[in-house]
Amino acid sequence: MLKISSLLIIVFFLILSVTDYGYGQTAQPKSFTHADTLRGSITAERAWWDVLRYDIVVEPDFNAKTTSGENTMTYKVLNSSHPDVMQIDLQVPLNIDSVILNGKQRLDYEREGNAWHVMFRDRQKEGTVSKLSIFFSGKPREGIRPPWDGGWTFARDSLNRPWMTVTCQGLGASVWYPCKDHQSDEPDQGASLTMIVPDTLVAVANGRLKSVVKNSNATTSYKWEVVNPINNYDIIPYIGKYVHFDGSYAGEKGKLDLNYWVLDYNLEKAKGYMPGEVQRMLKAFEYWFGPYPFYEDGYKLVDVPHTGMEHQSAVAYGNWYKPGYRLRDGSGTGLGLKWDFIIVHESGHEWFGNNITSKDLADMWIHESFTNYSETLYVDFHFGKSAGNDYNTGIRKGIKNENPIIPAYNVNEEGSGDMYPKGGNMLQTIRHSIDNDDLFRNILRGLNKTFYHQTVTADQIENYISENAGFNYLPVFEQYLKTTLVPQLILNFSKDGSEVMYRWTNCIPGFNLPLVLKNGNKKIKIYPAEKAKTMKLSKGVKAMFDKDSIVKMYYILVSS
Image: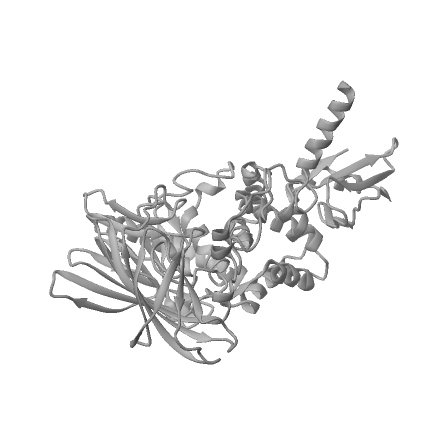
């Protein structure tokens, strides 16, 4: 009886260890609510219309910690057989005060949690372009630990003066303004943000400053505009005692305007620090990824109270004007202390995250894995390939392998934090497997050209890399993104050392990662599989099977 009970317990825990993918996850599957579906899926009330433009106005009250404003949303009707209801997202505790169609017709609406259902009186025709003005107000959610927790930040600078901004990636832009809060639909014709602030403060946002209007009530309205498509969560207000200096970069598409908005007491420090870091970043990233994707809107850094975020054309900066990540090096090699992590990493998102955006939050690895790998490529560009390898290997200590990188789709679920170091190591593994840096660089540049200003799926990215690499890397992506298993290469050498048997274990069925093994200027390429293969070892070849050398190039385990 005890033996049977023990066996049942073992079987029970084996079942618990199986994931939706059939292997490797240790955590329990998560349950989701109707609210998660409303937030994360393309509902019928979202599917029939396309956002063309946002024109947002917001007036924050620093002392009361309240906001009020409006979003005039230009949209296009995609099909005539649509419901007469539109889903707009605005998170509690903010409220919608009124909704007006084309400046004339007041519409009814009702709330369902964070989703609002706007009812139209007449069915709109396919191809029609209209404007919907949504007025809102209330006491918005505050970010407790920004940028990791989203919402408004009502802070004070070191001189005790008001300093305000927003962080909202993942949580969603609807935490501070009404919108279609789904990553798949960006305003194709850009957006404007007007901030009405006390005339003792300065307001900064994405893109270019279009107007400054002094109002009669001791406030000033600052209007900023981007002409390119932009993620909802990238549209951000920055309000404080800002001053400005500028510069330029001679880039692949010509002159790129550079602007720096910093607190007044940081001005001289910023002038001596930021431009050099930005120039080095742009030089490396335009080499690897292609032209900066938003020349029309320029590039800027903006002082913030938190560490930093990748807000398109207006990167948030809070790294103390010091190298590393607030003087820390995630690689443990010392290489991460030779450059400013926030300027490099958050600017890397201009290519992966802002230029190329995942349609579903579940594919956030497209943003974070490539941008994490941009750090390795930055080190590679400025300090050499060996240094890049060292940096990439060093960041593996941050990999936990507790949950897969890709979670459930259509519920606004964010995957494991392993999307950063593990995703970056996955890309390094594929790069070494391709063993052609010119080709690999062309793939990275090709991604940014092919999917320029687009929202994408994981399949599109994975298929593009496979097709252009000339090899099917889809099982490799599945292994690293959908399981917590680390591939293990088994090496069995004959007693006389004349041959080796090798195979994969701890892998999904069909895992097919090719390995290029090197010894000085010599190299071989092997194609391990689940079934063992045998190779004769000529003079000098055995050294290519050095465990430490293999592990440094590939995120795998090796046992012999």
